[in-house]
Image 1 (cartoon, rainbow, N blue to C red):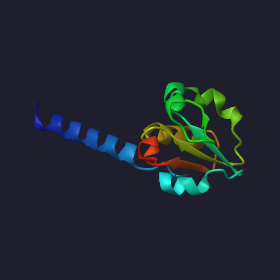
Image 2 (image 1 turned 45 degrees about the vertical axis):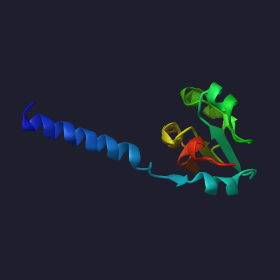
Image 3 (image 1 turned 60 degrees about the vertical axis):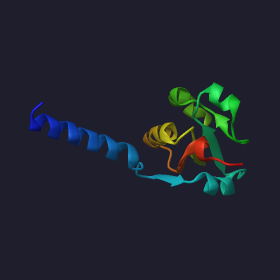
Image 4 (image 1 turned 90 degrees about the vertical axis):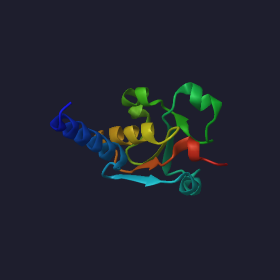
Amino acid sequence: MDWITWLLVGAAVLWLVYRFTTPTKGVQTISTEEMKIQLGKKDKQYIDVRTPGEFKGNHIKGFKNIPLNELPKRMIELSKEKEVLVICQSGMRSSKASQLLKKNGFTAITNIRGGMSSYRK
């Protein structure tokens, strides 16, 4: 490959890194430790976007399982009037879910950074 091709590949990689590490505008991000303070509050909704198998294996009490691939058709189960806290295994799927919620008119969205991988009871 010539240097122009390398430059284009490098630019594409940098753009992808930027795209997936920059939080979505209007989406708050908190740690699992900060999330523990929020648990149980009635004015909030808690969703876990992992697969049903992952959820069944280990989940946080109070979280509702709505897998990421089902979220578009199940958003009607959520209120746009309440804050939505979103968790997954590592934070990637919850980030995608947060973007999807934002695009569909939800205004109070919080992505839980690190997901279940960083959650300690």
